[in-house]
Image (cartoon, each protein chain N blue to C red):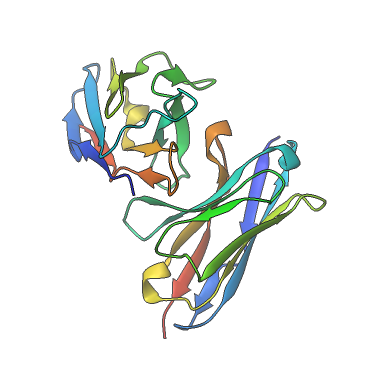
Length: 112
Length: 114
C-alpha cells in the first residue's frame, strides 16, 4: 500500500501569514495514464471534508485562490498564501493513483 | 441541490452486522464512482471502499476486505455498505462520498461495543 506522510502534523499560523503543508508518498503517484492523482481536502470542525485541489494543483470550483498545490512524483505541497480565520481545520492529502487509496494523517491548522 | 444522505448506523455488538445506505439526489448518480470513507472519533480520514459507476468493479481497504461489501442500485440512486463481523475498531462515522466531485454525505455513526 502507498503510505502518505504529512508534515507538520500541527501548524499554528498568524492571520494573514502563509502556511505550507507537505505530503510525501512512499511510491510514485504517477498513474499509467500519465496523470497524478493527488488531492487535498479540508475538514472544518464538525463538518464533512471538502475538496480543495485535484491532481496536484487544480483548484476545485469555488476554492479561494489563496490555496495552491504543487509538487510531482512523491513530493507535494499545499500552500495557503494568507491564512484567514475560516481556514482553521485539518488538511488531508489523498492518493487515488493506486488502490487502496490512502490518506495522509492530517495537518491541523490553527490560529496563533 | 446535490445531496447524499447516509443512514443505517447505530450500536451493534462485536461480531454483528449492519447495512449502511446512502441516497443520492441532485446529480446523475449512475455516472459517478462512489466511496465510503470513515473517521474514528478524534482520528483522521480512512478510505474504506470504492465502487465504479455501474457496480462492476469494487475495491476495499485491507482492514475491511472479506468483511464489508459495497454495492449500488442505480435505479434507486442508492449506495450501500454491508458490514459483517464488526469489530470495536470499526467504530467510526461513515461518510459516503464522490470525493473528486466534492459531494459528501453527512455521515452516519457506527458504534461497535458490547
